Length: 574
Image 1 (spheres, rainbow, N blue to C red):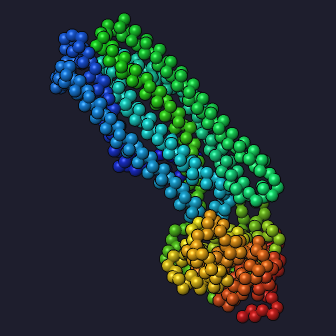
Image 2: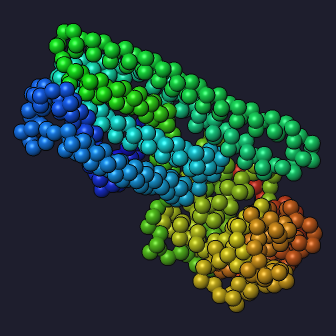
Image 3: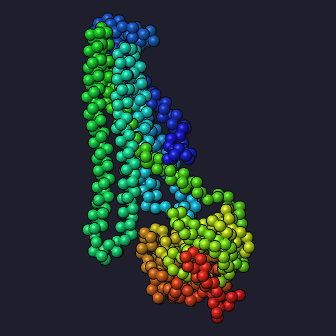
C-alpha cells in the first residue's frame, strides 16, 4: 500500500509496510465488530427487562437462534466480556497504528535524506538548505501527524460501518435515514477541508521562513551584537513566529466552528429520527432506546471523522512538498555504479578542453570555453575577482560537477559519469570555513579513513603542522565542540588539512583556506603545503598571501574565461 505523490503526480510513492497495514486493518475490523455487537445486545437486554423475550422483534429471535442466551445475567456477562475484549483490541490497535506511522515517517525521512546526499552537487548547492532542514524536521513530522489522522479516520469509518450494520439489524429505515444524513454532513464540509489544505500549504512556508531566519541569525550573532541590533533580530524572529501562530489559530478556529455546527446539526437529526420512529414507524422502546444509544455513539464518531479528514487535508501539503523534493533530488541522482570503477592515477596532468558550465537562473555561464592544463605534482594558483568562476572550476576539478560542454581529462582519459565519482575518492577539499563535526579530534580525522591507526593519524597531523593536538588535554580524544568551536580558527583549519592529507589524495584543493587566518597560522599551513610539493597535485584558490607565493603555475580567470596561464619563474616545472 502506498500514499503520497509529489506535485504534478510524478515520482514513486512511499509504501506503507504491507504486513503492518494488513494487521492494523484486521484490528480495526475486530474493534468495530465487538462494539457493534455489544450495542446490539442492548436490544435483548431491554426486552428481557421490559417483558417477553420476543418484545424486541425479529432481532431477538435471530440472536436466540445463533445461541445468544436470552437471560439478563448471561447477557450482562457477555456484554462485559465484549467491552473488555474491545479495550484489549483497541490497545493493540493503537500500538500497531503507532508502529505503522513511525515506520512510514522514518522511511520517508530516510528516503529524503538519501536523495539529498546522492543528488548532483550542482542541483544540491542551488537549494536553500534551511528549507531542506525545515522539510526533514517539520514537514516529515507533519506527514506523521497527517498519517495518524488518516489512520484514525479509517478506524472511525470502520466503527461507524459496524454501528450502521447494528442499526440496520434493529431498524433498516431509521438506519438508512441516519446514514444519508451523516453523508450529507460530511459533504457539506468540503469547503472547510479545502481551506484546511490552503492553510497547510501556508504553514509549510511559514516553517521554512522560521528556519531560514533562525539559521541566518544564529550564524550572524557576532555581527548582530557588534552592531547592537539584538532587538531588531528579536523582532524579526517574533514576527515570523507570529505569522505561524496566526495560521495555527485560523485552523483551530475552523475546526471548532465545524464541530459546533456538526454537534448541533447531528443532535437535531437524531431528534427527528427518533420522532419519526415513534410516530410513523411504530418502533417500541426496546428498539428506539438501543437506536438512540447507537446514534449517540455515532454522532461524536462522525465529528471525529470530520476532524480527522480536516486534519489530513491540513497536513497533506507537507507530504506533497516532501515528495516534490524527493523527486527533484532523485531526478538528479548521481550514478550508483562507481564501486567497480578504478580512479585515474594523475601522473601527468588534468586537462580541460572547451569547457563551459552554466548554473540555472544565471544569464551568463560560470565558465565559458575554458581550456587549460594543470600539471601533476605541482602547485597551481587559481586567481581572479569574485564571480570569475574559480569555485566552479574547483568543483569541476574535484569531480563534484561535470561540464555542460567540453571535456575534463585525467592523464588524457575523459572524466564522466561513474568515473567522476571514482575520481572524487582521490580528491581532498579544504574550504575557507573549516568544517568539523561534533565529537573528538580523532573522530573528525577518521572521516577521511575509518581504518587509520595511531601512526597514520599522527603523521597526518605532522604533515599539516597540527601537532598542537598532542598538547591538548586529551590529545586525539579531546572533544572539539559543536562545529569545532573549542579550537581556534587556525587550529580548526590545520585539523581539517590533516584530515584531507590522511586521505592520501592525488589532488588537494584549497579554497581560500587561509584567508581568515592570522600571519602565524597562515605561515604554518603554507609550510605544510610547501612540504607536499612533488608528492601530490595542489590547487589553491586565492589572490595573494603565503599560499599564493608557493605557486608553480598561475591561472587567472575573469568573467568565466582564462585570461592568463603561466609557469612561475624560479620554480622547477618538472
